[in-house]
Length: 208
Image (cartoon, rainbow, N blue to C red; front, side, top):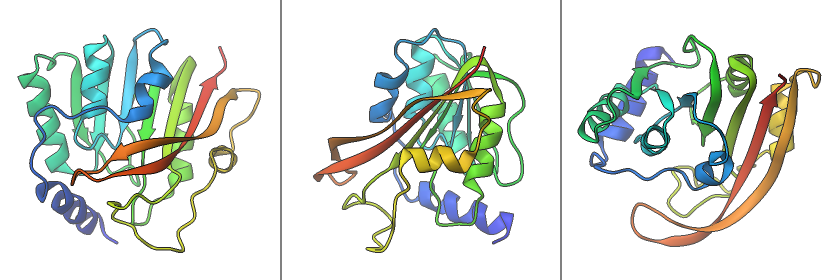
């Protein structure tokens, strides 16, 4: 699929949704990073921007990227509206082709799934190498299919956190898996329905 087709697909996904006015962070974010000292954070696949805004409110300097220009523009507007424009930089990146420059204390990838072709292992490996010494990569994936998911394929299989770590294939001398576990919770979908879902949580730390 061409870059233009990818742009069109994800812009269509976001344009079909009402623009959020105060998007909430992903459930696992606060629990995973609240104890960390704020620094520079990269939000991969920022979507509606709930994670980026939550982090900025807690003192992080946020670079938030998404393949959708619609999502990026909405987040930039939201950050300014909430008085966080000086703490959030929202930029469009197609992670299949390029990666944001710089070094980060934290990189978050929440539900970085796509029905389109992408070498996700390569993206996450590049993210791990973009960490500063002592920095952390947080990867949160779906571990189950919610009733409101765009992917209702009954044959879909969700890799375990350890399988994701194995796929990234980092040198254990340079990176340590601090956490690799499944977590269940009750979630609410965009239509107000609730269901039990499973999150797969992987936290990797780069050596000092």
